Length: 116
Image (cartoon, rainbow, N blue to C red):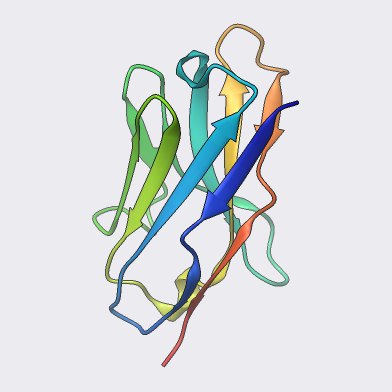
């Protein structure tokens, strides 16, 4: 059974930092492209950042220079610095198989709240 589990969320003041982690079980992590998405109340789910199996990265314009995505054999990370209230959302990790793009798995999501 495939499972993705996010951790590291919580409440932080504007300008603060958080580090999210995504741990996978039931899949070979190295054969998947990995992504962080987020969804704020009333908004559609949006791509935050992605990292390929070869280490290539992409970022939404709104987080460039503030967020850093990384991965190792077992986990994916999102280092979030200079957080803003508009970063408040539920953050999800997503894994997409390199050879079969229809094999997509999502985590259950974790809340990040940026507020003073």
